[in-house]
Image (cartoon, rainbow, N blue to C red; front, side, top):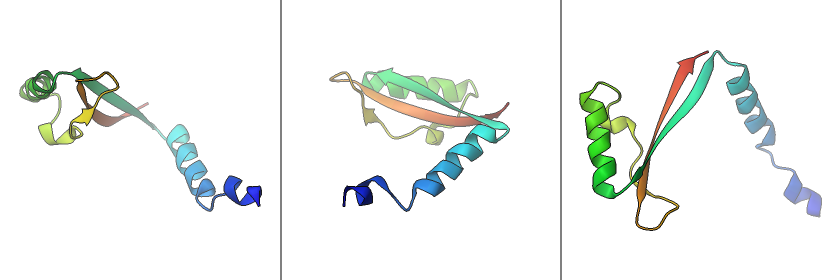
Length: 80
């Protein structure tokens, strides 16, 4: 019975995706901004004005591990 918890029908799919990412010519990067709500929003807009990334490319504001702070994540792929 405990075996059914260890086996998941999605495991081969996940393993294939991880393998594909590791063997691909792309490298996934994540840029993280953590701080006050206003500070994070201001930084995202500043980076947009500098041509770094579209404002819409960032994740919605999420609660950060530290209390009272938020975070936003930008995910990009780059060629290896």
